[in-house]
Image (cartoon, rainbow, N blue to C red; front, top):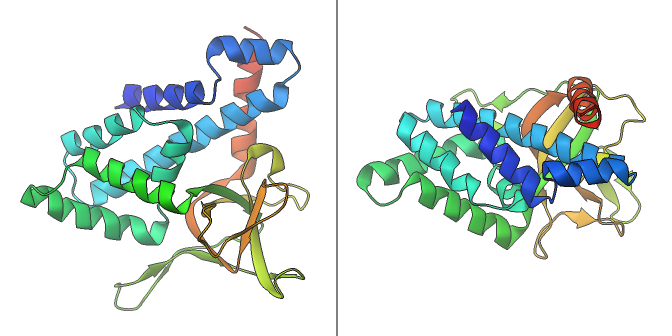
Length: 236
């Protein structure tokens, strides 16, 4: 399965036009930031693939069903992969359990699930956003364990909207590190026309009164991984 993860990550890099040759050309032409962007994004995708695989296992998917799910991702573009993997924590279990029942009835397949999630992501502009914070947020589960939530509430008053907003960047280069936040929250960004999320004029930032969390990672560890990979590539 690790080889398939690598294949998906490579596919992701290639669809961003960052084949090994393009990476080399990028380094030679001073596009170091773009190279770091590609490396960081592939690391994020790898992390989300691991998280998604664990969620599929928790929903009692068989090994061959999980393999089919990941194989279906290989044929997608970088943006499509991000859209499919942008399922928030609170929805992953619900969606995967629903499709597991359909699969058992013969009404669906793991590859069909990927196709459906991709279609939904395209309709709403679902993708991955980056939110930095020093606050260690944990998932909230209701007392009857029927409802799970993992959200970031808006906490900065935005004059444009007149209500508190939570912000996220849409690329590595604009991840806000000035506050030295420890935690990088991967959130579901909504970039479609019919969405409650708002976009800044630069299009590199989005905001909403509440953000749904997909995953939490240590930003410093991922920055170090990015720099190590960058150094290895640049020294070849």
